[in-house]
Image (tube, rainbow, N blue to C red; front, side, top):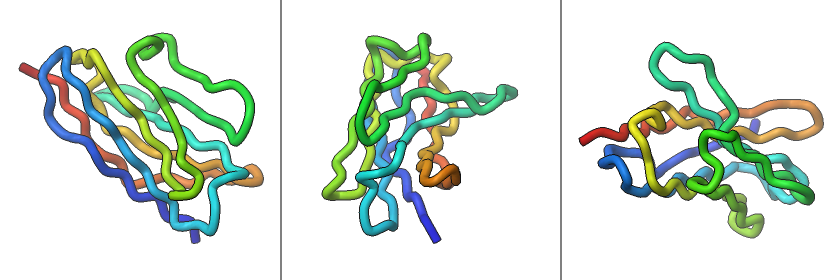
Length: 115
């Protein structure tokens, strides 16, 4: 059973920064595709950023240049550094792990951008 535990959400003012972390309860994430999704109020869940074990990193257009996804395989952890946050970034952020066609999700962490 794969478990993903997120942390790092909270309340931040517009223009501020937050770093989300997600740690997986697996032997190693080195072969897995890791990603961050978000679901804002009244919206569908959307892909924010995705980092494969090798290859190109994907960012949604709305976060390019502001968010950075990274991974630390030795710690089974993926990060999402979020800078220049905007009110429209307010959402529940979910960590995702893809392995052999299966998707696993964290419980979500709330990010609220408000003055």
